[in-house]
Length: 609
Image 1 (cartoon, rainbow, N blue to C red):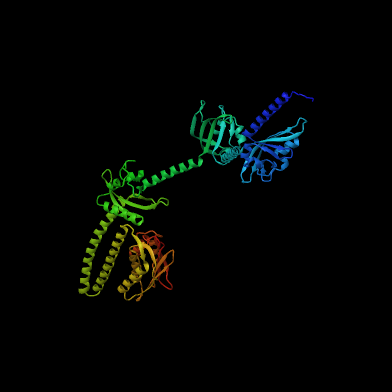
Image 2: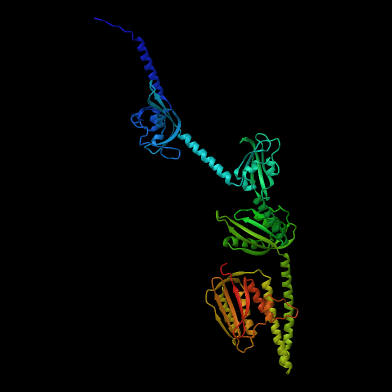
């Protein structure tokens, strides 16, 4: 027997060392926070660590044996375009024999989610120098990519915003030299960014530097108003804010806003306000506003002046206003306001006030209610006009009218009484003369009655209401037929023709019919009242076959000719009719009837108020 003994303790030690090293490397591979795979030379994955399992969403048992360009994995670039197999990091590394670092790609897995990876691939060679396998490491950079996209979008948004807003931005160093100029600088200055950057300092484009020489960290200069001149020579008013910064190699950021239009609007508004105030003062008028449901009332300074108050002295409440209204007129004013609130219609009334200095004045108050479309809140807005002089003239007119008419009636009745005695007892021709005196007395008494109606009309507030003109016309014609049975008075007035007119409109129509009968030169006058209506207007025409209305009479009544000292006219009837129509927001016109006579037409356009 031959026994051979060999000392293999050294080899065992080497094997144990290699085993330990292998276990250590395997442990590092398995526990690496970076996903790792080992691929053989044909691209088949032979091993994957736990992080690769998590990253790829597959158990390691299913990852192993797959090709690196597995069809289940759609591998794309930044634009979402599939990457050809030959351009993938493994293919490039195997083709060149060099490691590939930082290749970024997206992997769309079976679940449809895209995971963005940063991939490194390093070929591993044998002792003979041949590539035996490759190790690939993959880091999930999906969150990094998301943040990068958001940053790019944010930068693009800011870039687009800066390029399109009218505000512009400069950044300068401490000496005022430009380190950054926003590309939209041309919106204000008509210079390009390059032209501005070529300037010596910010003072060259702004005219002066609003920032002080000593301008350090945390300092701010806000809303300095400057007038600058653009490249075309046009002046602009700008607001400049300067902030200390440490960006773009600069230390001062200038934010510049063009407020030229706003300044122009403010000046125009100031001029309009001044003109309005001047006009209100000239008209002895003031403006007020009351938010319905609240106690506060706002008066402008002109309204305070009307009430004898200094600017800002009005207490600003409804009760304070009522305190200035004459005690005898308060109930009427309160009722008018309440009616306006309930019915929503504008109001107009004249009332007395007792000013702060104790002086009584007459005020013409007008107002309306406005409803807010959004919150439904209501505001009453109005104007107060001092009409004391007008009211005094009206009072004087009424006194004179009453006294003169009373005396005239008394004296005329005395004259008429004596004339009747002469007519009854004296022989002709004195009896005939007396009859003419009686007729003239009756005419003059009729004129004074019309003068009274005109005085009452002119001294009262216009009152308009919706009236059925068809019914009114039939009533007027019926009364006229009874007064003048010898005349033929016809009517053509379709029912339902309404308009908003003076409440005395029947008096105007009566005067036109009476005028046609009284001035007719025929034994049997023929008069027709014709009414026509359309959606926009109602016309009432009175036709006669008389001698016609003299041209001078028509021109004077319509205001086309001044009233001369020798003008006497044919009476006050046409004047009364004209003024009633005017107070109805209507018009009165004259024409010729065919074949003979006149046509007087009243036209009313307010059918809906």
